[in-house]
Amino acid sequence: MHQLLKFIVVLIGGMALTGCGSDPDPAQKSQAPPIEHGIFISATDCAATGKLTIDQCGQAIDRAVAEHEAQAPVFASIDRCEGTYGVDRCDRGVDERYRPRLQAFFVTLANPAHAVPLYPPSKSLIGFQSPSRQPVSARDQTLRVSEAALTLAYENAKLSTGEADHSEALGNAASDIR
Image (cartoon, rainbow, N blue to C red; front, side, top):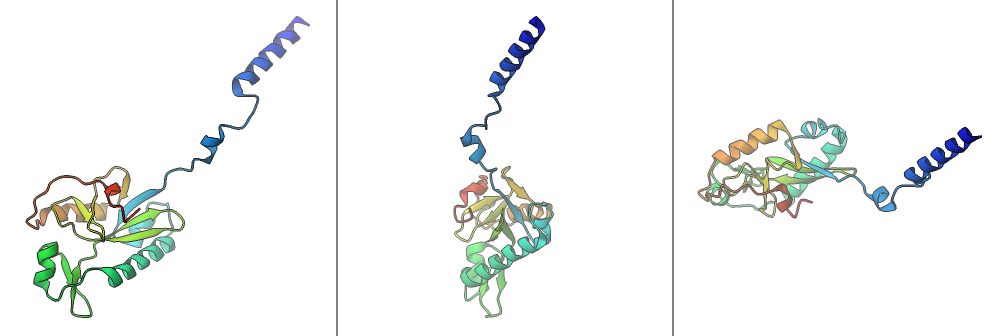
């Protein structure tokens, strides 16, 4: 009988320590994992993360390209565009006007996926800039950055626009992206 009593005491004590099988704190239960973001140059690049399918990435990037075509600043001459964005940072559109070169995409790795076009930075930065000209660092540790996008970001840092600012702006500074 003494052994049985000992067993019951141990069992009850163990249940008390584990909360008698009760549910965890509701606040902990409702916290979803943080949404990840990344910088990619293509749908294939994006899908390589394993977070989204190539179709999800492609659809988000297609919407970002449409946004670029509809809303990117346009210039009548290459000189004006390059005066704003730097040499070799502009492309001529089918309308014969010039726009900043679309280089990469800032992608929200969630369902539904969302992408924003990224342009060469206006300052010497290892990264890009958002449509509202907010810097987006490719070295931001909170972002997934593909190897191809990182290589392009380092090239951007080499093409100076004359505005020397070697500070590293964080990706979360791009308020129009998130």
